[in-house]
Image (tube, rainbow, N blue to C red):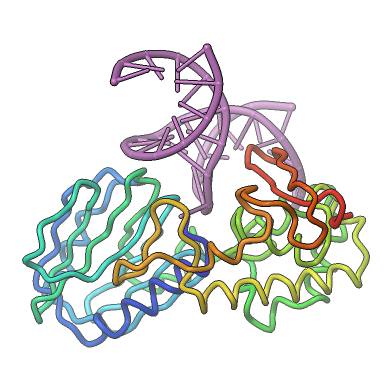
Length: 269
DNA sequence: AAAGACACCTGTCCGC
DNA sequence: TGCGGACAGGTGTCTT
């Protein structure tokens, strides 16, 4: 999916089009997403969108009649289009606004979700027990050192676990470990405090840069205006497309937790 | 509590 | 060209 920078990019693209707008119609073209789209969503027709928020990789939409919790899964994206624009093959949800614009949810693999929340979406069972936001002050070296102390798993798996820190998926895990020169296979509990501090900094730097570039597009992701995410050009190891930019040796691909890991054996010890 | 495997689904790419 | 298999941004759930 869409990792944190792609969800943040989506939120920023949507905000100016949605805030204060009244929802005139909600069409569920394909209810079979990761979970069936609840029919309560339709009760938001006629409501006014008051605010948007991102928590982890969830996009929260608050209206005066209830809230929506969105997740983009592996291949989801959102676009703003004129309501007259025809729907395409994998467009599963269409929300028509009172000004002739519309929000479209597109997701070829259908691993994404749209859920309804009567009360505080931050207290939803999928969300309430998640770890800190990586760009917040709560995610700092003291915190990461403490949470790695007892962990026997590889550091890459540890930072992709949403109970440690949210928002980091396969791409940004690989890129952060490259930037901090840490071998992804190293057990979390065996990494020095100094190096974990460097990792915290690397994560914050990479995510901020990716947000500035509008995220990373591999196949499906697009910004809300249809442009791709330009951080793809800044990837150092993910995708194995080129040699290591530091030492020029080939990038290595291994499998960890059924996901591909890309790293430089020479630079990441 | 923690770690690992599996499932969900569609599309693309590569080798034969 | 066609077909089979591997692989793809995530994460809840089940099993050890």
